[in-house]
Length: 634
Image (cartoon, rainbow, N blue to C red; front, side, top):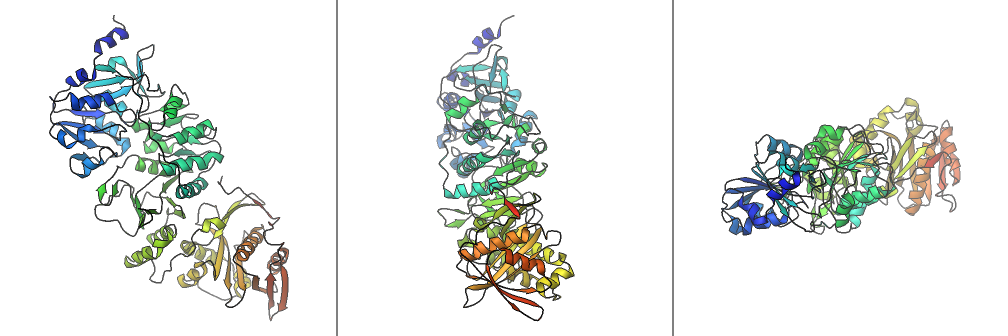
C-alpha cells in the first residue's frame, strides 16, 4: 500500500494546473478570512479563461477579490454570505449577490446541498507525521465545504499555524495540492479613541468575573478587551478570535477555569489579526477551533453560564431593533453570528447580550440611535432579542421594557445633540407621553457609585433617569403608611406620571435626584430615592429622601446622604434645608451624623433643619458601608 507521502506527491501541481481541473458552471467556495488561498484566487482570473457561469461563495475574506471585477462578468458571479470591503461595491452595483443567513446555519446548507459546493479552494498547514493538515486560522464554514465538495484544492503553506480542535484534514481528502510560502494577510486594528474607551468601560461593568465572552474585532472590541484586564477567570467562546483576546489569555485573565462548556479551552471558529496572533495560535492546546455549527449554535452557546455576547451595529431604532448589515439603505456586511450569540447569551444562566455602538457617525453629524430606520434598512436583530445597548453615554437595559420605556432608555444614551430630535420623533409615533421631557444630564455615570452594604449586599447609588419612572412609582406604592406619613406628611397621594417625572427631571443646576438600584446593573428595583430642589435666589436646596422598608437601618440612607452632599457641594451649593417630623428620629440621626453644621427650628409637628457644608466634612465616607471597586459587579 502506498504511504500518504506518495499519494500526496501524485496530487502536487501548480496553481494553473489546479484551476484547470475546475469545470464551467460550478459553485466554488473560497477559504475564509486570513485563510484565503491567494495563489488559487489569482489563478482563477489569470488561468481560468475556460470558465464561465461559475459562482463563487464565501464569508468575509482578507485577500484580493479579482473575480468581482466588471470584466469578469460572464465568468464569475459572487454570492457573499457576509459582505467584506473587497466585494462591497460589486454587491451594491448589482455585479454580485448577498445571501442573508445565520453563520450557524451555513454548514448545514452546504452539507445538505441546499447550497451545493462543487469545488472548495482552501489553504492549510503542511501535513504532520500522520498526513493530517490543519485548516489553521479558519475552520468556520470551510470545514463543511471540505467535507461536501466534489473537488477540494488546497494550498499547503508553512506559514499557516497548526491549530487544534476540529481543524484537521487528511491529505487523502485533497484532489490537488499547491505548495506555497506566503504570509497570511493581517488585519490591523486602529487604536481605540476616547469614545471607544468610554463604551468599553460601560461594557466591562456588565461583565462579571467568571464570565465567558464573545466579541469581534475593531476599535470597540479592542478597547473592551483592554478594559477587561482587571477581571478574573474569564472564558472565551467566540466565532472570531482577535489579538485582544490573545492578550487576555496571555495576561492570565481569560483562563477558562470557570467555563461550563469545554473548561479551560478558548473556543473559536476563525482568527483574524496580526502575525503575532497566528504564531501564538500555532500548536496551542488552549485554543479549540470548531466549525460554525458548533461555535455559533445558540444552544451550545447557552451551555456557557454567564455568557456575555458583545456585538456592534450600524444603528438602533427607538424600539430596540438593530440594523447591522445595511448602511444608508445599502448592503454593508451581513447577519454573521450576531443573532446566534445574542440568542445564546440571552438563554445562558446569568448571561447578557450587549450591542455596543458609538452614539454618532460621520464625525458626529448623524445619530446611530434613530426614531425609525430609513427605507432599505435591514433588521438583523429583532427588538424582541435585544437586551443591553451601550454607547459612550451609558447603558440602556431594554429587557422586559415596553416601547415607551425602551424609547426613553435609548434617548438617554443618545448623543445630547440629538436627544430633543429623537424625543420629538418618539412623540410623533406615540411612543411616549405627549408631555415627556428630554434627559438633561450628559454623563450621569460619572456620579454613579457601586457600594456594598455592611451585610455584603451590592447596591448602585446613581443619578435618577427619566426611564426610572415606572420603578420609582413601584417604590412609592410599596411604602407603608408610616413611611408615607414620615416622609410626605401623611398626604394621600397618587404617584402619577407628572409627579414622578418632576422628580426625575434633573439637571446640573436646579434639581437633582439619586436612586439606589438592586442589583446594581438592573434598574428594575429601586429601594431608595434622595432628591433636592434648589430654592430660587438661594445657595440652599430643599432635600428629601426615602428608603424602602426592609432596607432601612442598613446604612443605605447615610450613604445616599453622603453622596448627595458631595454632589451638591460640587455644584456650588452651600447646604440643604429639610423638614423632619419629630417622630422621625432615625432621619434626624442621619442628618446629625453627616458632620454638617446643623441648625434647627421647631415647627408644629417637627423640625425645620438647615444643614450647611463644612469644608472637612463633605466626602467623608459613611462607616456603615464599604466601597466596592466600580469596574465590575460580581
